[in-house]
Image 1 (cartoon, rainbow, N blue to C red):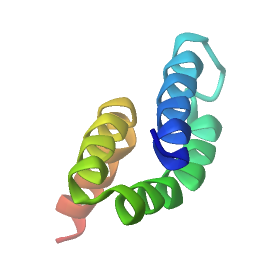
Image 2: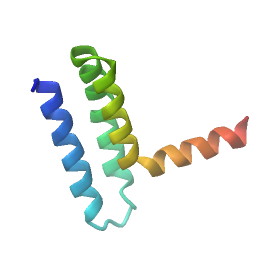
Image 3: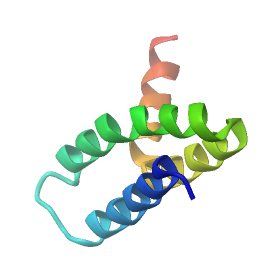
Length: 80
């Protein structure tokens, strides 16, 4: 297993652990930090291991970060 895949798995575990604990800001700050770290990590995984692994981690990350994606989709539909 390559280093990007190991870091990607750690990111997925960390995101799930963060989601388990309640916060006052509804995980907005944690989501921003996870996105800032996760997007370059996704690019690194895709670059070093191929598009299938990149797609697998994209789907895994999207399942964890689904509310920001839903909010983004709603804002795009409102403006367009």
